[in-house]
Length: 293
Image (cartoon, rainbow, N blue to C red; front, top):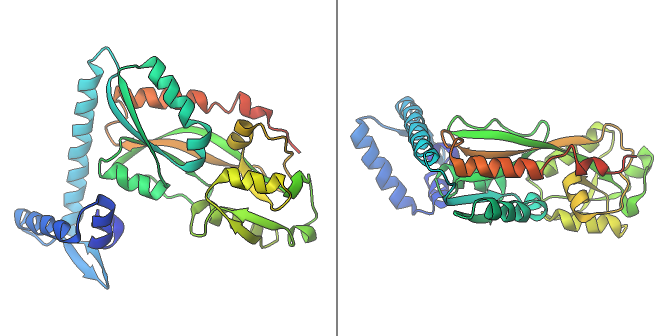
């Protein structure tokens, strides 16, 4: 974890350990390996070449263990056990309750535990084995590849369209420069993506409001207070009578994926979760009803 987080303190926080406990474990591991594993760089740390090699072997060993557990579970005729699932905010609002209900009905011996997380936090929880599966969204040109220690399955492409205040269908470029926008919080992938899309179309968005809650974004649009980029999943879920703007080059699409640890993708509980999610995210059906400009 330190090589992912940059500092022992950050790694300890991500794993819910104390920094001293992480340092002690690393010192013990260095003695067992017979080689230094970390080198200080400023206030942070980097892995040595020996540590990089150790991590590669560890990832392979963990993947083998995950495949072994999946194989044992697959020998059971019933999907059972506990599945610890996490997802980001908007998918939690629109889809997760129906997915949990379907899994409860189809696999009554499966115990679903769920928590809403931000994607970065979720990846840390997944790597540290505190959750089993994570639903993430990714925006064009902003997402990094999933590390080798994790496995991702694409579930759907969700169109994202621009909506102007009060659902005005179109505006000239000069008018767009004076429109107030609501975005997800600064520093988020979605925030950076919206800014880039607007700049590519010739204007800098006036970000007057920020919120991680996309339902709040929708309400600000319908009240005529702000413009926003909203995914079709949210519009369809809310049954909003909105017409997208004619902003050039839209819609674009975010991808929604299910991520688990490498080797665990064949675990029956994760396969059941993946199939149920995909069925409820079928954009060839209900989402095609979104009105186009």
